Length: 102
Image 1 (cartoon, one colour):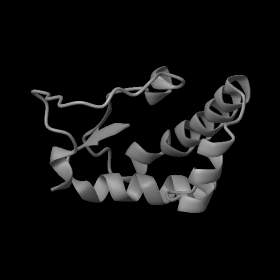
Image 2 (cartoon, rainbow, N blue to C red):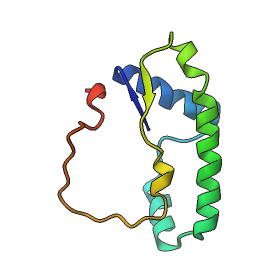
Image 3 (cartoon, rainbow, N blue to C red):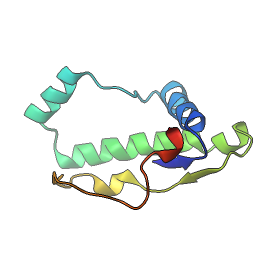
Image 4 (cartoon, rainbow, N blue to C red):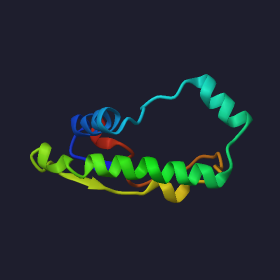
């Protein structure tokens, strides 16, 4: 996850990771349903996630120079949340989520 000065930078990052890293931005709903019905072992998911994250980091490591050193800050490693239970509820944060996009 990254914080950028504007949504244009985020869209460029997404497109670069998709194009140069081969990582899709969308997953078909049928594939999501199949994964929920028959989840892969946690160790395989962890290894796959780590490989994808490494690919994405490699692609974006060259981005600040390509964007003219845009004000870009990576704020969280979502890999830390892998395998955790999601608890639904009403939550709030003092920091707006994706504020720069809108």
